[in-house]
Image (cartoon, rainbow, N blue to C red):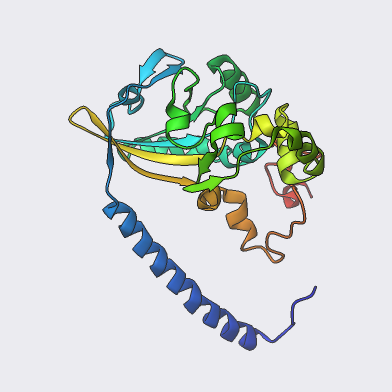
Length: 270
């Protein structure tokens, strides 16, 4: 225990001071939410085709009769053997939310470039029920800044999260792979069955769309740390006594931990 131990009265005073800061953050978050609503939109004229369990579908089809569509860009490339571990941790909450959103005029769906058969097999393994489709036959991921080609990676450059990244040097790729092997990036890559270069040609993100009179509009996207709020375990850890308390990659797919917590409290087994 590294924290200072104080009386309940002193703790209440400190907690009240922190509460004021938390309230300010909440107000700021409300202001940002309003600014998102005021963000202009882009009309989508390009035709995209997706592979779904019901057959080929257009972007309009993905709305499933609703006026709003939220997409999670799940990192599962065509050359992956399994989905990204970090995306998988985020996706563990999707089963619960998509039903609620569907009853509020919002369709939620995950999209990846891997073939549908791979997605379905992994979805079954993870026990997920949320809609997940393949965009592998279109430029959807590339157009929305989450899927990149070798040419972009090694020649023209990648723009992710509204920032340009330096071009990879072919001769330095192997050295980088070795250097990053034990980092979260390298571990994540190896756990998908891909090398780092292949792994990072997919990126995480989320995008929002609106459908009006048969026309689709792109209204919002977020990437990288902009997805932190969607990564539910971190929201809980930020409120735990030791916080995030991490020095390296600690998370795994939920079926890969050495121990799976009981669904009931240990006191129930006394």
